[in-house]
Length: 255
Image 1 (cartoon, helix red, strand yellow):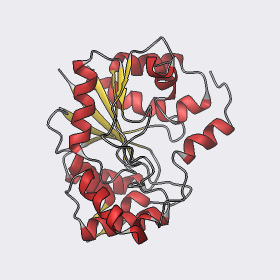
Image 2 (cartoon, helix red, strand yellow):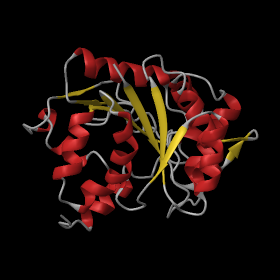
Image 3 (spheres, one colour):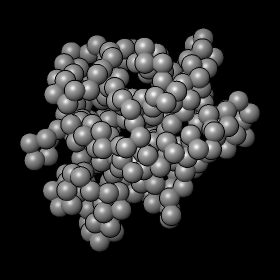
């Protein structure tokens, strides 16, 4: 069985340009992110889905350093970029990750993969009803589900964010096209931000790496934030999934 992980990584960012290339202790957030994914016990291959932007050369250099393959595709149609990254691999399942989650936990990745495969689901994630901290987002789906989205998605928002078509047509959210499952945390920690979208987020990530380490579990980072409210509060007012909310506000049919 082939389980392909794809992480989205681009140089441009409206709120924090080149955010994934920021360094803590001499290591970029992107390298930290990729090294953590590579600790997964279930993923059989990892690829980076990036763009033709000039700054992508820095992303490619990091991928090459770690022996990770990459594909350069559309800046705006991320669904197409993601699908074209997966297509040559003909995987059974695809794991969607994003590089703005530098401290993604490989154990959470594997838990979500196992839930999807063992339950025979088309789609499983910990984002349908979020209970994990923002920054621990994992989506797993059959390649056939991705292909269906690529063929049938009509809305601009469905092309800018890869999985809305699958999620909105999933059984957990009342849809009928895709059997789905929501992976839940032991407690609701969805208000915490361990992601990087703004400068305030980077300050939190920097504090976590410097004080906890770049190779710890999600629970270790959560414990630090709960014990150091002055760090936790730095980015606590930032809205979760702000980019997707903006896409919905400007949505239109494009196919």
